[in-house]
Amino acid sequence: MHFEYCGIGNGTAGRKDYPDGVLAEIRERTETFNTWPWGGVGNCSPLMDEIADNLASLPDDGRQMYAEELLCKMQTWVWLYSLSKEKLDSVSNSIRLHSIEDFFFTWRSAFRSFAEKLAVILVKLGINILDIQSRCGITIIERLDVNDLWMVFGTPQLAEYHLSKLNGGSVVPKESYRVKAGRPSSTDVPFTSLLIGTAEERNKILNQLRALIDGRKGKRVAMVIQACVEAGKLCEPTFPQVESYFPNIGTPQAYSPHYGHCKGKEYNAIVEVFKNCTK
Image (cartoon, rainbow, N blue to C red; front, top):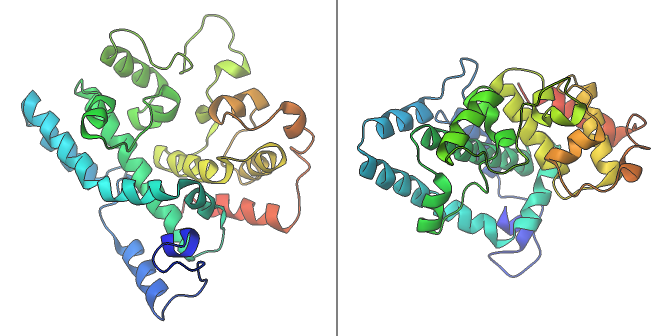
């Protein structure tokens, strides 16, 4: 990926071809890898269950050390990804099945899922992964946010309870999910609650949305959201709901005129991506 997109390794521009058999081997390894952090159809991940059991069996000091060792195993990925993050972010815009970009999206989604599930396991044990990251100098997750993590906890209320307990009674950040008296407005309903499917399916849809929206604005964002809705993976959101989860996507004036009116080959291809992303 770095050779292709970042020019790392030989000082020349990235090439589009790969030696014979490389993509086939990558595909085989990716599809047969049996320790992915997401839960599968049974919503059970042996990898994360083993980590949770190991942590639960240790004393407090041992838990801290175990978590530090897990983070250190991630340092090579974190280092490589940070070399050219903006360039690698653009990789996920590819929608060509079984391409190197397609596999990269799978790997990065697995890494994000691992980070979020590890954070939640630690939160339930009263441990803040952000503190451990600061101590180790390795960052695999940027924040502990109810809107980001509630699907891993199970419900927004559970996420709020555990994060509040971790932070001495306050949920951080303040923009997280809140329960208010009276009839809720659309902006009170988290964007993530509009996703359709099982917890695992919603997580995959959200990862795909992130990959296609991060760093984009206006028309592009409208196209992705419309495609996700048409694919049956998302209840139709308002602009404030989209903006609450994806900041810096531009103004309503740049978004609203395009939403509902997108069409063409690129749009149809994105619809198919969302239809297939939970398979």
